[in-house]
Image (cartoon, rainbow, N blue to C red; front, side):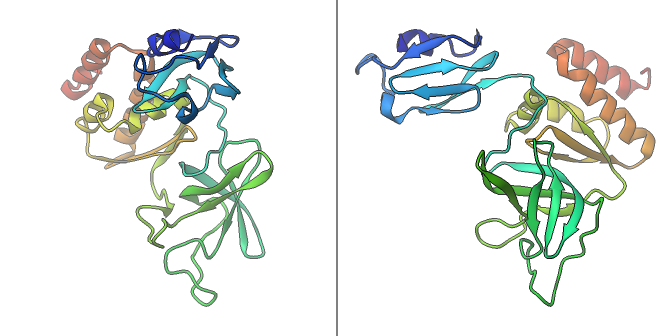
Length: 241
């Protein structure tokens, strides 16, 4: 029943779990027809089925998804990602975003770009962009501008830093507005941190040694409890790591 669906928020679910949407008001203030199913959930008429192992999450008022530790990324419209320019074909750049196929990026999809004023993008560059088109029937398309034509932090970046890959679950923790992990992480050494929804993280500290330490800490902290993480970070801050 839909009631058990609500009760499962924050708990583990597995593929094959099916929930019906027949719970009427006033028992629930969520209208079944307004329910939005995110990654890991599939809507089939009046039923919602689970197609991925993980933790059921809820964003008020009516968005549900499965939080899993997968590393394979599936492009989603509107998500910001870190890509690697792999090829240039005419006026289009091909960008590896970690999905099943490369995304396209037009040279006009940068702030201030025109036919005469082309952006300086080279094969091998890192770009931070947003998906304009992302569905199973079309090639994904990236842009490095927002709806107002501004870069808003997007574009070519990455000089002198380190790029590495983490699970999508850790990415969501890092991007959480109240992430304790980011606060503890940034308090160790001054650094620049860029996180893409495709599981790629770029970090740059004042020295190569600090950059490598931060990257290793971030990957190690994924499976630690809050207490274990705080103890590890304290050892690093005290120089006993």
